[in-house]
Length: 317
Ligand SMILES: Nc1ncnc2c1ncn2[C@@H]1O[C@H](COP(=O)(O)OP(=O)(O)OP(=O)(O)O)[C@@H](O)[C@H]1O
Image (cartoon, rainbow, N blue to C red; front, side, top):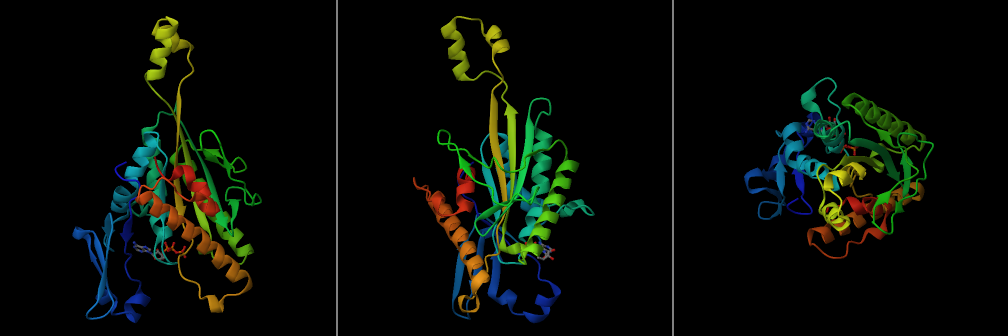
C-alpha cells in the first residue's frame, strides 16, 4: 500500500427535487477531476479548494469507483494485510449506494461490498483458504449483531500479544460463494431496518460494519522454517510433510458511517441529544485517528470510541 490513508470524494447526480430547488448548485461546487480538486465557491470573490486522492464526478460508474477506491485495499487484504474502506457523508449523499448496492437487477449497479467479495472469492484457493464474515451495527456505543440481532451488546476483545481485535460474541459465517454472501447481506440489511424501526431511529444514525476475514494457507517455505530445518539437520522435504501449513490471516472492514450532518444542539434533547453526542464522539475520534495515520504519527488515539477501538487493527499495515 503506497500510503496509509487515501481519500476520495464522489458527487452523486442531483435528484429531481434538487434540480428544481437548487439551480445554483453548479455555481457553488466545482469538481476538477484532473487536478483531483474540489472547489467550493462561497461568493463571487471567495472559494475554498480541497485536494483529494481521487475526485469522482456524478458520471463515475460503480465499477470505476470500486477500482479506484476499494480494489487496491482488497488486493492488499489478499496479500495478507488488513484494510478498511469507509463511506462518510450526510444522509442521502450515496454512502449506501456506493458500498451496499447488490445490483440484482443490473450488475453494473453492484457496490463495493459485492465487487470486493467477487474479487476475494476469485483469488482464493477453496481447498486451503477460508473467507468468513461478521456483519454488525454500532449504535449509541453498543455493538449489535446484524446476523443475530438479539445479540446487541457485543464486547470488543484485543489480544494483548498480537494487538488483534476480535468480537468473540459475534456470529461468524463462512462464505463459500457469491450467492451465500448476497444472502447474508440481505439478512443483515433486513435486520438493520427491523432493529431501527424498533428503536425508532433512522438507519443512518448507526454505523454498519462488514468484517471479512480471509485465512490463506501460505505456499512455499518461510525463512523461519528454512533455518529450523538447517538447525535440526533434517531434510526440508521431511520437515515440509511434518509441518502444519502456515496460515496467514487478514481482514477487510467496510464501514457505512452514520450520517455526518450536524445536529442542531438547541433543537435536540433527551434521546436525540444522546444519539447525536455518540455519533459525534465516534466520528470525531475517527477523524483524529485518520489525521494521526495520515501524518504517520506514532500514536493513533483509538481508545476514545468503540468505532476506533474496533478498527484499531484494520487501519492498515
Ligand atoms: N451515484 C449515484 N447515482 C445515482 N443515484 C445515486 C447515486 N448515489 C446515490 N444515489 C441515490 O441517492 C439516494 C440516496 O443515496 P443513499 O441511500 O445511498 O444515501 P446514504 O448516504 O446512504 O444515506 P443514509 O445515510 O440515509 O443511509 C438513493 O436514492 C440513491 O439511489
